[in-house]
Length: 99
Image 1 (cartoon, helix red, strand yellow):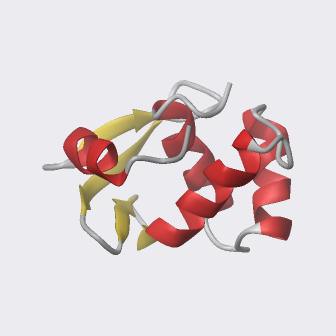
Image 2 (cartoon, rainbow, N blue to C red; image 1 turned 135 degrees about the vertical axis):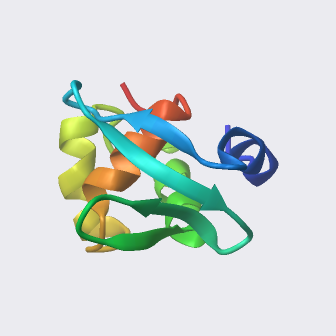
């Protein structure tokens, strides 16, 4: 199932606390728009680009990337983008695409 951006916007509109893959911590989502999912922590702010997240989901759905969050991170860096791969894993796990 491809990434439905309307569902992403509904889920993260107004922000959210997303559990980290390893557990025990959270990733702060500050909002979402047509560009991507906006995130922050104490040291930085960034945006997980919509196109990158959509590409990652397409690759996961085509079994070209792992559904296992730990393996996904390295594959994301190689096949999608070498930026905020761990944060992308947190968000895609929260959305139900990763284990």
